[in-house]
Image (cartoon, rainbow, N blue to C red; front, side, top):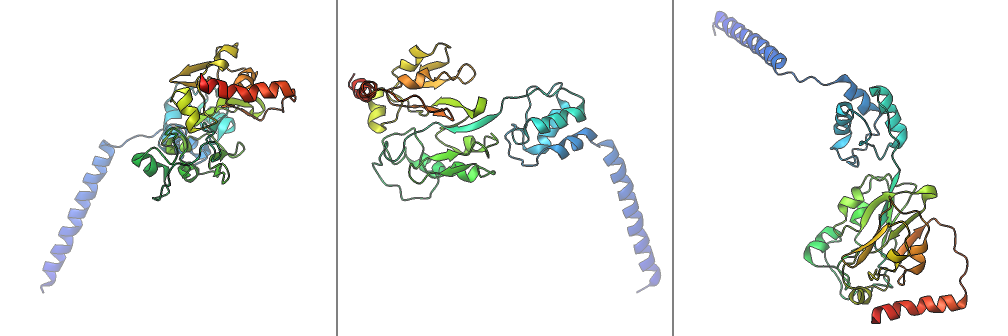
Length: 296
């Protein structure tokens, strides 16, 4: 092969590569996207969990939103909490507004004892699949399905299934309120609520929308929508909609009067000190109340 032909080929390739490089350089400069260097700084102090609990697709998305925001009042990193937000505020020269810490709560008290199975599911152990095919293994079509999708969704080991009750339990100390369990539950029984002073909370542990007699037949612990809690609350914190009560944690003053009058004990108290022991007459009246309400 002629040596000159080889040299011409090599030179042609070199010139082509050089021209392509120049073109690529000018194109990259023309369409270069500027990224605020503060985004990298902010992202470096975020926890890197990429859990999506902040409402953005990962920590980079959160960092972009924080830099672009005029103020940080509506933005919060649930994993890093106030300590991380304080660092972000220092980097951006903005004020970090303290947000009330939240925690996931399970709004179902349909234990194996209170809500017995009426059929047996023999398919893939997945709440999503079970919910897509039928209402569940009990007569309550609103309650926990017990397959543990929420456990698998939690990156922080904050949820476990209780083998005795068949329900998920949340560890307050490990929960970062990222909301992954909320998204994973096809029955929407998990909710993020204010953690409360001394981690004390009141909430209705039921989402059954059936009428009282039907709900109670399906689950002894169901809310029957009787409205006694509404009448007892002095702060307008409770409403009954679609046959089930709901406590607004922004209005609730944790007086516990509502839970004391609930005939089915559907209102849960968390981390409160024990109540004074009730007299035998009061206990007898409380035991008779659910039966009277159901018959009504």
